[in-house]
Image (cartoon, rainbow, N blue to C red):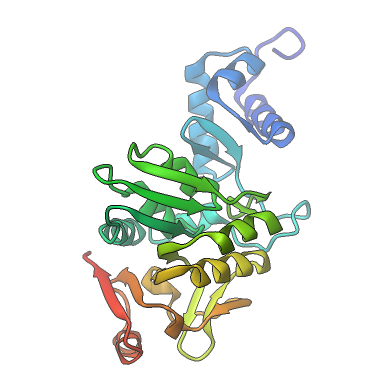
Length: 266
């Protein structure tokens, strides 16, 4: 209520954003109580805010859209915005990458919008362990009944949903994985494999160093792109999972490097 009268929709949306700004996270029940409205009203308001990419909902928790404005020292990359690009291709890539998971695997799953789809398709019918440092990945793995989940925590970066700290990096360096699934912002035969944020670099490098099989998981739009922070050469990987949009040139480059190429069906 505001001044004894019900809040209108514009007021409610502003209030929701203000609550999330202060609390960092909330849920439908808490928001309904704060606004003194029904759960259904809050859900309708959240649909609009999600459509406008101002909030994100992760299994019942509501968080602010990972903004990259004057309040943030991170780059202008946004995981939510990235996830909105080529979603069907990323879904297919994630589903295909998940078929590479075997019983008793120890996995490292990198942060990213494509690796999130991998996490969504992880199997339920076999035991394995996942170490990650990303909220969107962990929120999926904890739901798998045969998955043991480990978190490399630290400072939370809102624009990538990634945790980062020296302690988390040390956890990665001590872990021994059978497979690491790594995302990237750009893949170039000349300039290597790159990411958008400097703070991602050390975690990606440690994940590669700690893993037996190194699997690059990227949609075809990333090939030929170069981002600001280099973390590996393409030859450092053993396998690449992508979609059918990959060019003949990059398919040839991957083959010449001796990497196994997995192409998700359209």
